[in-house]
Length: 238
Image (cartoon, rainbow, N blue to C red):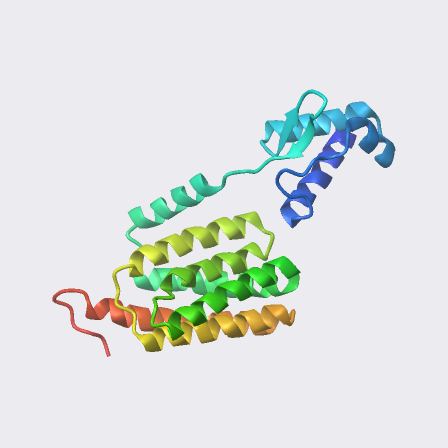
């Protein structure tokens, strides 16, 4: 096999580790010599793989005694903000937002049930507990609502899905930030979050898909009606 092809194979292997979450930001990769020996390839091929990944911004290469190749901590916020801005400039309607969420979030929940690890589940549990406490204390759990959906997306270990979900969450937060949400709606939101969490914890992808689909339809319908009631000069639709 040609050295170029070998280096590309090594680079793809590392990329899969990053996208799956097996390789996390800040993690140090083996030294060129050690990885070459492990994979039974030349050191030149490993060096070329590291170099190509560094050019893509996926690795940081440090020199010196404490140096080496490290998984980069990539900042995806500019991409998320750009997508949110494009959606806002397009004057996205409530109906379009619902349609996008229905298309995206149930499959995300299904994938989350299959890929979530123990830490992912614990983070969602902590968030749902905070929502419950906010309701019992007559607080506003709304600040946790869309964070729940972000955490579910993170469980997929799929960067494009995570970025799209974050952009949709930003848009939904902006759309409903000034809406007066009733206690009944808040209670329904937390109940649905608990059911989605239960499905993810049970590794039941179909149940997670089903509950998330019901959740999006229910919440968007309730929030949509609340939004319409607060629009000046507009009648509430029956």
